[in-house]
Image (cartoon, rainbow, N blue to C red; front, side, top):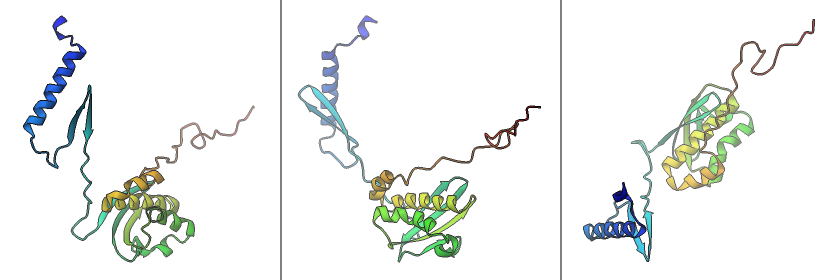
Length: 187
């Protein structure tokens, strides 16, 4: 046990020798290197160089993502175009008749500054119209980040990439609803 105890000087020597060995083996740095070890005075700093994220685009030039909200699930495909939105084979104005629901869908484009630049085709199942609009927005935001990875910080800050996990609470036995009790009778 006594031999395993290392002092700070021994640790510094080991780190400096490891850094020197790494510098000797890679005389010419390449783009595939993921970490550079910098030795300045007595402090060592490991900086991770992040590679740019590649867009995920299929053979038809589309990006696909799945969005969820409450019990609704939306499959969303986006591609560059004049801004036509199709939901379950119908225009967005007929499927989501209320302006609030269309506004929820367009929030991702508004925040990213991409209004009218992408065509959207999506299929939505489950839940009601409000949950389906939220699912389309979630899937649309994810598809935008796959098509343009640079938009991820903007959409993440707005909270559009986070799946809203709030769902209806289940009914319990011995209760009228999830928490509502039956009417109390004293006699």
